[in-house]
Image 1 (cartoon, protein in one colour):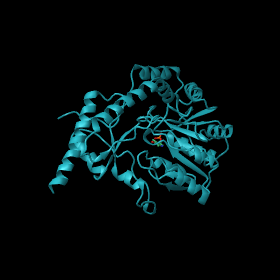
Image 2 (cartoon, protein in one colour):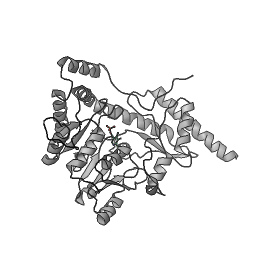
Image 3 (cartoon, rainbow, N blue to C red):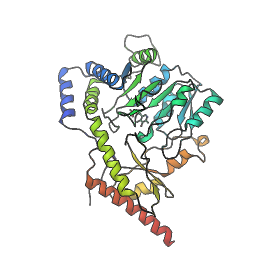
Length: 359
Ligand SMILES: *Cc1c(COP(=O)(O)O)cnc(C)c1O
C-alpha cells in the first residue's frame, strides 16, 4: 500500500521550533511583545499605517465589519462561492449576507454584479476574497463608496499595481490558521490606514478594564502564535516561489491532452498559488475526490456550499461548488509526490472517458 499524499502539509524547520521555545522561556505567552513585533512587521512590510493581530481570520472579518459600522438588518455583499466564515461573520451582527455570483476561471466575485447590487440595494459593506490566490477585481467596488473588506486568507505577500494584497480596500484581513499560506496554529490580522478602524479593533479584541459589552469578546492572539507567524513570514517569499514552481509543473504535466475532461486553473500573473484547482467538465468533483482517495491522493472540495435553499440556483457559484477539485499543493510536496498526484488524476479522468465511450 502506497503512503497517502495529504491535501495539506505544514512547512517548518528548527526556526519555528526555536521561536516557540524562545517565547516559552520569556514567560509571556499571551498577547505581548511578540504580537507587537508581528504588528510592526506586517505594517512595515505592507506599508499600511496599522496592523492589528486578532484570534483568527474569522475574528478579523467580524471585527472589520464592526469597525465599519455594521448593525442589525444591514446587507453585506459576499461572494456566493466562499468560505462559510464570511456568512457567519455577517450573521454575528444580525446583518444579512447577500450572495453575489462569481466569475468562471478566477472564481472571484463578479465586480459588475457587485456594482449593480450597490446601485440597487445600498449594502452597508462588501467582503471580497482573493480566491485560491487570484487577486479579485475590487477597485470599482471601492470607488462606489461603501467600505470594502479584502479577505487575503488565500493570497498574501505579492503586489498588484504597486499595492500589496491586503491594502487595496478599506480593511485587509489575514488568517494564520495552520494550513493557510502563513501558519500560526490560529490567528489573524487586519491591515488598514484608518485610525478609527484600527482603534476600534484594538479596543474590541480585549474586554479587560472596559465597560460591559456583548460585542467585546476575547479576540486576542497569543505571543506563542505570533512567534510562529514571525518565523513563517521570513520564509514566505521562498514558500510562494516553491508553490509557483509546483503549480507550473502541474500545469505542464496536465495540459495538452485533447480528451481531457477538465479545465486547468488560471495562469494569470501576478497571483499566489494557494490552491491548485481543476474544474471538471462533466464529472461531479465529489466522485473524483473519492476515487483519488482510493489511489492514495487526498484531493478536496476546496469550499463547501453554505447557502440555504433560496440562494441556490443556476449560477457560476453552483458550478464551482459541484465541479472544482483541489489537488495537493504545498512547498514540501516532492517531485515524486507531484508525479503520483498527476498520474492518479489522469488515471481517474481517463477511466471516466473510457466508461463514457463504452456505455
Ligand atoms: C480560512 C478562511 C477564513 C477564516 O480564517 P480562520 O483563521 O480559519 O478563522 C476567512 N476567509 C477565507 C477566504 C478563508 O479561507
